[in-house]
Image (cartoon, rainbow, N blue to C red; front, side, top):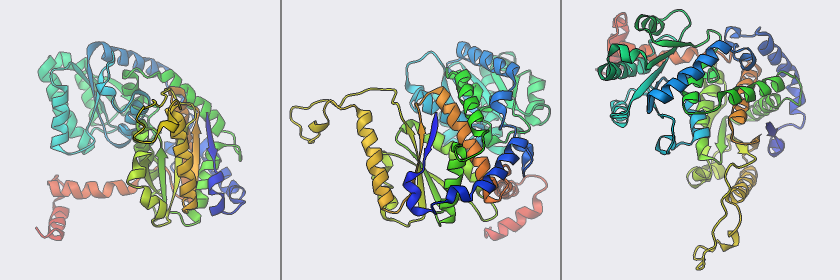
Length: 444
């Protein structure tokens, strides 16, 4: 289902780069498989596609069906790993225009990922008079953005349906036993799903965190998990034939060769939010101790008309990883035009996917010749099964990459710095001294 082509980076790295990484990759493989490396408390995702909670999985599907029957809108309240994976899968498999399409499944609105009043109010206006449900996702229940948003939507839900009606429409995905959100859910009688203790947010898309909103859209989550399970078996086998080893070694070799930015690109607009999920996955996992590739993304061919110039001739600090779907889902032949004013009749009758493929190949050659190495991750087709495999592939390769880099791939100590400053400036109790110091720095 997933293959990695590294031939277009050969001129930029030593010929034996993969063999040179085998010892480090072997150690990383052991740490992941045996949960014995740094951050091992958060490696529950490694065997998740096989060991997931089957009873909860059945409840997720039942809750999704109930949401579909009760509501024409679902508000997903979460930030970071609590929403990017779900949104990525939904847009990739159901379209970025999912809410505008005719369908029997509910519209999905994402909230709690910003502190913008305009953005929050827009979601409220879009819901309007629709019957809606809420899936609030937070391990603790105290993360600022989703906690504030949930206050608004909880109030809206209770005003519309009353306390009794609201409890039938609010689903909390949170800690198994503790935390503010878990306590609230138990007190109010919301159905709850678990954010596993041993799975960090950015690795959680194949848990209830991602599966409930994905299932509510009608995506076959059995197929999603089956694809992940298949890739889990592939990645469990150490050696040069392992695609996750190939990707991790290539990234490391290019980083050692002086490349500092990795651009993830795809030639499908629907892949945009999968790239956003990927950026968090790799950015939070590797970006620490003054190390790590900077993860960026482009949407081709659109961004070739904006970022293409820089990629072709700017600083030679980057390489590209292109996700390429091998079998298109749609066939569309280019029409013949009598006037041929655009001079494109030579394409008449050719399938648009063929044109897209030539654009991929032409771009790859141009960028490589311009000094930008290319990795190609080949995915059989844009289906739920293949998407599950791709998710697991990127997660496993990320765990390997972090260990090879020499960092803990499962913590994010730097994330808290801005939060402390924000709390102090907002006047949160206990931050008084810090507030005064920060206000002085700001000249207030």
